[in-house]
Image 1 (cartoon, rainbow, N blue to C red):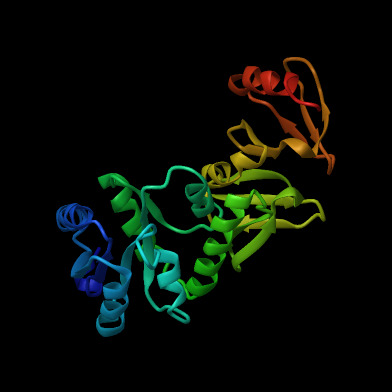
Image 2: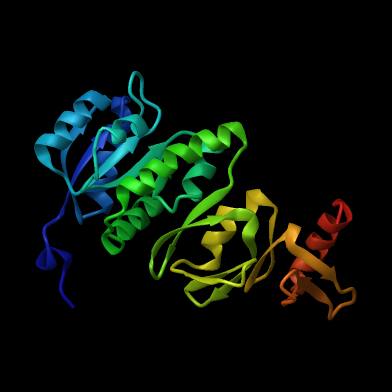
Length: 260
């Protein structure tokens, strides 16, 4: 097994955040915990970040979302088909975070956790892709959609690339070891290159329920609830879904409070 340094050069990285202390802390943590990364420039505004990216041509940019004058998302719009990866760093705790989850895009919450930082770097090294512009544009649309409460679809990484999925067309999701399947109303089955936990976090705000370690269901797509300890659910496509004992009480409370 070869060390990373023998396989390729380090990820040439730029930090963009209008708060100097945030840049200082992030740079320290990258130097300490992420030997795969080389910070080549630190910027305190979107304007200086744009200049640095054009001049330095980095592999990776850590980008704050909420900056004065030009936001992180507006800054990205100025790059056509960006050939660098981005990890967003944000203090948002509400709709923006949910928007990130629906786009399969890496993000970190402030203050940055070192373990999450290391995982984000691993994801960049593993999942280099050529669809950044599409994903970042979708993220901007999703942020606005969450503000207006008009979210209709999500983006998921499949074995064929990134696919847009209408949320209410999903009947249920099924675990497949380290990957997952999404079962749609038209009978299509998508192989998602992420574990079920990823889909759970993405869809839980849209009336989805994790009823079993292997199943995540769309509550609005339940056809029949079968009572009894050995009972379960029948979904609209007639697929039978078990409810685990550990989830049964929680599910029953939700069922009793619903219009189902």
